Image (cartoon, rainbow, N blue to C red; front, side, top):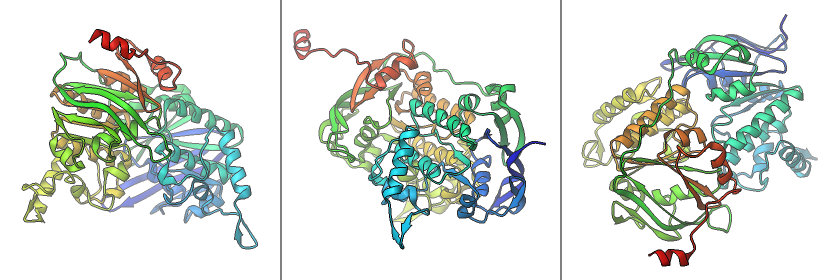
Length: 518
C-alpha cells in the first residue's frame, strides 16, 4: 500500500458559469515532488486553493496521512502543516518583509510583539536557502523577484511539511530558478513533500518524481517523470502536438521607430540611478530582445519609455518626434503599446469586468463613448471579438470579473488589448510569464506576426530561451547599462549569462577613437 501524505478524492469546485475542478483526484506521496500540469484555466491553482483552505469544494474528500480532514481556511491548513507559495503574491505592500513573513504567526511575550528571534530565524533561513532579502524593506519598494522570495520564506518560517509551489519560477531568473530547484530537493531531503505547479516542462523533468495532468478542469492522468517526455506531457496537457515557433530571417532593417538618447532613470530603492546613459534604437520589422538579471534597470528603463517614470536626463525620440515630456496617454496615442511586467499593478483593474479592461486604452474614442457615456453594446461587441481571437477563457465571457480569471488568461487579455491598439512600437515585458506551452506558442506567433507587419517590438524577458528564439537582436543590461549587443544566431545562453552577471563586457570605444573616426 502506497504511503500518501495527501489524498484529494473526487474534488468538485464550481464558480458562476464554470466548473473549475470536475471530479479530480490527486495523491501526494511522502517525500516526493509531484507536479501539477495543465493549460491556463485548467483548474490547477483552484485545486491547490482547495487544499490550502481558500476554497471549499462542493464535493470530494481530503485526507492527511490517511485521515479525513476538513480544511475550512488557511489557518487550518497551516495547523495541518500545509503551506502555499501563491502565483499572485499574498503580501501587504505597506508592511516590511519581516512583517509579511511573520504575519499570522507573530511571536509575542507578555502580550507584546517580539521580533528579535523571528528576525534571526528569517535571516538564517534566507542565508541557508540563498534567498537573501532585506527584512526591513517595504514590499512596495522591492522587485517582483524579491517578493517571490518573501513568499517562499513565509512558508519555510512556518516549518510546513506539505509545500505547495504555485508557479514559483514564473518571475525568477535562470540562475534563481536553478537555485530554487536545489532548494526544493534539499527540502525533500529534510522530509518535506512538495506539490509543484509549473508550465515549464524542462523544470518538471528535472526536479519532479511524478506528474498529474489536468485539462479543462478534468483529471487526465498521472505519470512517472522517468517514464515520459516533454513532448508526451505537452500533448497530455493541450490535447494536441505542440511545435515551437521559429523566427524567419530578418528582412532589411526598416526605419527607426524609437531612439533612446543617453537616457537616465532614477531608482526608488536606492540612491544610485537605475538606468545610466542608455542609448539604442528600435527599428521597424524587428524584435529587439533585452536580457538581464532582474534588478539591473530593465523595469526602470521601461518605466522611462512608457512614461511611468520621468527621465533624469536624456531624450526619447518616437518616429522622429521628441516625446520625452509627453504623458502616458499621449505616448500611447503617438504609437506606443505596453505589456507590463506586473499585470495586477499596471496591467488590469482587477475589479472591473473583462470588457472594461479590454477598452482601457480606447474608452474615450467616439466608437465607445458619446458625450462621456460609455456605449455598452459596442464595448461588449469589441470584447467578445478579442476574447474569441485570443482564446481568453472566462466563466462569464465579457462580464467576467477579471480578478476571478486565471493568471494566464489575465495575461492574454492584456496582450489582446495592447496589440489591438495597432501601434508602431510594442513594449513586451515578460510577455509569456505564467503561460503554458500552447499559450506561449500563440503569443510568440503573435509577436512575430506583429514584427512581420513592420511593427517594432521591444521585448524584455528573463527567459533566455525566449530571448534567443524570437529576437532579431539582443541587448544585455547589467547594473543599469547596456553591456553587450549580440546576434542570437552567433551567441549562446551561456555567453549571454556571462554578460548578465558582469563577468564579461564588450569593449567600449574610447571617445578619442570615436572623434578620430568621425
